[in-house]
Length: 282
Image (cartoon, rainbow, N blue to C red; front, side):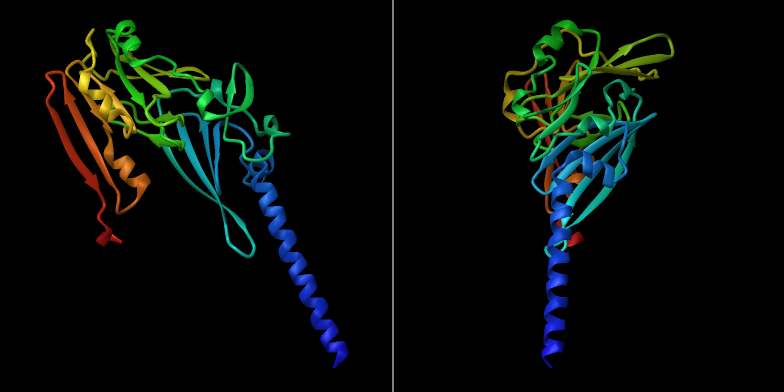
């Protein structure tokens, strides 16, 4: 009887030790950007990474495609690293801003944001990211452009509008734009798309969009009160549209959440339309 009890105790000790070891290994790997990307076989074409609690968001770029990896540490007894991915096509060539995961060696702990700045991969707090251009500067410098100002909130996410088919939104403190997307005429058949980020400028080309220019105008005075909750801002000659593609935001947020598409005309009138998936759709 004592032998059986000793054997059971030994078996329990070994099982508990194995569970603790597996838990330690999973947590340690999750907190190491290099170990985690190796574990998930994300070894190159990395564009940006963000760590937020028990979630990583990693955006990768391969020819013509942006992919967002949402990586979570789940499970209370034996933690497991899970990866869910969605992709969107893009005309912009982000390859100059991508890097390999070898550049992540030595980075540990709660990192925040990781991206390549001036050729070097760095971990930076969000507050250190500076605006590439303010809205007023853009209106002065790019009077013949069409443009989108993007707001990422505290998450990395993919956004898209009918204008571009895909772009990256860099995370930022609430209420400030972290990238500017310009659309300029390139030739008789193509438009150039230029994306300006704190870590660099990238561009691509698309077939002629025939969009109205923003003209040399200014934003209505009452637009500022709506900027903080905006996930994306589209500026044209006659209006400012906040959340120009609300269904992409609804898809990201899930059910029981409301998203407003707000159109602010230059004459001061405002149109506000509600989008969302009701809870009963679950």
